[in-house]
Image 1 (tube, rainbow, N blue to C red):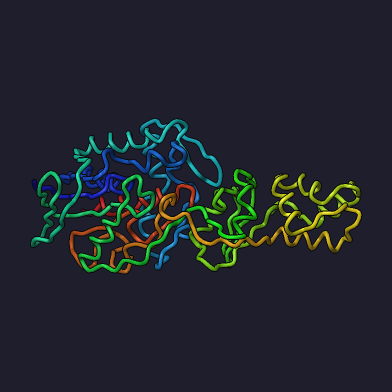
Image 2: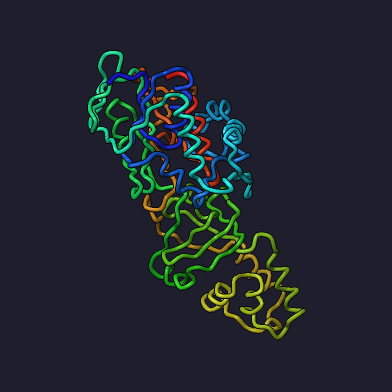
Length: 392
């Protein structure tokens, strides 16, 4: 079989690239080894697909080259994808912090992409693994489970290593290396952190306890969002966000109540409730089980009237800078994204084309561009897919 464009990977980036190329009249084939397209889209956002974010800028992306994403993000914006969603009459809402979700189901976003593919005469083959890729003169010869395919342009949209249960593999990285590209070290991103030893013992029976708002800090980077204690460690949006910046050994600090000056609040509580124990007073500000644990192990509760103002303010300072020693992450099993990947130095930022191999493109998660939690990674998928689709 001979096609103009072969896209490997029927996820967000691959489908967007295929649509854009197909609309230009290119003969496009999309292959995926999974049994259906858009699997990661389907599971995203709790089944409602956080498909973009109104506040997208290059500042919300991690990459060895922080400038690389600028061109693609500028040329395909959240407004462009919203227009597509509205064209297909998919109802959506803003949840918080600019995050846009489907009102109903992420299935509608996949159906939209597949309908656009059909309208652009894009063919999609699932349950079709790739066995070998060769460059043959001006084109590529790709041996698959369904025979050999020849393509003028080859687009790698195979994703990263996150969530292997959904079929994630290192295929894209291996192929990049095959063609001489540097692949930067990968690790799990947007992932819960784990605790071990006595650090885990201190918190493990708090599993299920949540802070609606916590501010988590590593170095100069901080995120304010919900936090959740788990059997293995800590999770929630604030932890998932900071996990992309945290490395083993980094100092992790949590402000347990960023919207209230705890020291002032405790001083006021002493006046209002002098006979109350510290643990009971704190239980009105923090989740009761967490307040009890903090007092059992570290704060040594006694009646409020027995504290001086300075002591209560010192306790407040501690709780605004609470240290938790994480030992690692839950890894790719639960990670939403993969940090690192194909080095952007080897790619054109405007087209995603390889600087080493004409006709070879890398888009989406396989590239060393990783967004924050909240729709940013989908926007990178749409933008990078569109950038390549305009030129393949």
